[in-house]
Image (cartoon, rainbow, N blue to C red; front, side, top):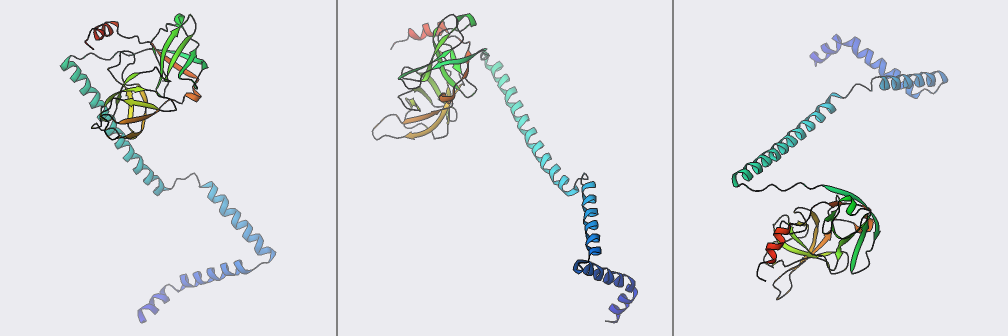
Amino acid sequence: MRRLIDILFVFKEYLLLAVFLLISILLLATNDSPQIRSIRTITVGAIGFLQDAFAFIPNYFDLKEENRILRAQNVTLADEANRMREASLENIRLRRLFELKNRTAYSYVAANVVGKTLQLLRNTVVLDVGANDGVAVNMPIVTEAGLVGKVNAVGADYAIGQLVLNKDFRASAKVQRGRVDGIVSWAGGDNLDLKNVAKTLDVQAGDVVMTSEYSSVFPPGIRIGIVSKTLQEQGALFQAVEITPSVDFSKLEEVFVVTSLPDTNRIALEQRLPR
């Protein structure tokens, strides 16, 4: 106790100052005279001005945390970039090792949709490009979302495209995740069907379906849609696989025609195979 009293005696000036300041603040807060209100107004304004004046000074701790997050993201992105670069180099090495042919890069012709039918069994689009633009029959039609269809007829300046939502449409397809092959067709409605998929094969809702290398018309890797559901029918050899198209045909306005023609040598050879 004696020690506490000695400490208080040593710092008595500071203690008295703190007590007087506290009393002054209480008096200012409780006093409502015009002079005191003016002092409070000036004080609040001064504090606000100082806060605005020094607001440009960043919070050290916030910046430290933000830098930590950015460094972590940078490490993650760098790792992903390195793995993608390694995968690309590995692909080049393997292709050189096995002397595989590189897939040809295709060029595109931009076109506007000037006519469209979506309520028929044989739905089509009319495009404002034709033979004068280098468009030919059987060239694929795509958007940034995926496969639209293929060119079915060509005039000098216009072309008719067969949509995937057409009862005569067929395309060899592959499920991206499980590498399961099948044939895409349309049987009416808003969705597509993936045919010839055995019940034992792994296909799940959410899988991406794209064109496969087995197609003689469509280049491989064009997105067709997403598996919306599968159905295992009793006694059937194949499972029913339903696909939601990636392209919104109701909003189709601009498309691209892929200037890729079927390989006639391959088609001729395939036609010679026994059926």
